[in-house]
Image 1 (cartoon, one colour):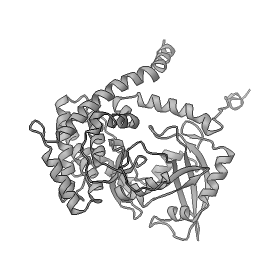
Image 2 (spheres, rainbow, N blue to C red):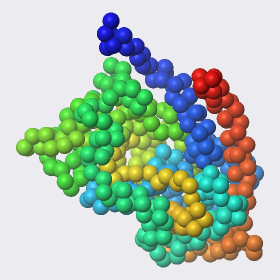
Image 3 (cartoon, rainbow, N blue to C red):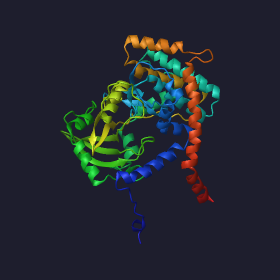
Image 4 (cartoon, helix red, strand yellow):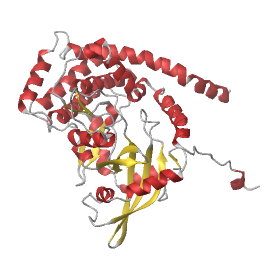
Length: 414
């Protein structure tokens, strides 16, 4: 018997309902890897805390589109359609018109857990909260376009990486050596019904316009779907429907490149919307509108729609789109990164405020500073409370979802 014939045939889930248990298991193990990863994947836990007495006691700032999930990994370089790069919020699944305080607290929690993962002492967490508030106030106080990379080595590094990347890098990472989506751990086959619905959705003028928007492409080019697959990607969103579509771009002189589309299901957000706020009822369009307000470089590259009854949003992946990863930080780098990311967040918020609201918001934030820490006392109390809540929840999560896997690995080695 040949090696090829002896190879075990892989059986992939046939429907999305069959996929969900496998996706949830992968999400749970991913969240168990570190406490910081748990925070990134446990958006629901954060909003459960917001519903408690402590969360409800937070002040309310001017109503703007907020990210709703402003953790460190949701920020990074984004390529504009013109080819240059902006550093922006890069994941808007939870975006709503709401309270900017929620973004501030979420980012502060993420930075605090990153510091703990880097074995930095507790006093550094207090300094990070101070730096975060100073960076946010810098953006609100008249420097909304200040470079977020000027002081943070981590941000400068990821921007340099983004600037050097070309389509061959994206091809190698996502596709390997072939111009197709290889089935395996990352990509699973679509059902016949899903593929039919997807083809009908992609055969629309707004998708062709999205793909041909970059300045380097012919505006009159046609697109042809070369391949498509279910995409096992993300963390907190694992379990939702997500698809990758590989598209050939065919200009007047023949094939001129390819486009990799990320098509993601949009559902009702966990983030609380402001009472009376006007937002699209189509969940995908909500994400697109929030992106255009908070991250224009990303928002201009997105469209919404419906596939097989699911509301979705679509963006093309470009090689310059990268997420910020914080590994081991020292004190100075942690503080610089906190300030830089807070400026980025403040820039996203302040561009939506008029002068009167901005001035009032700055006054409110400065007036809440306590004697013991150069940041609002409510922000510090929130971080302390949330770190405790998430540390306990993380350990319980590991016991529930990762213990059996760890025992199996030990037994396999023995």
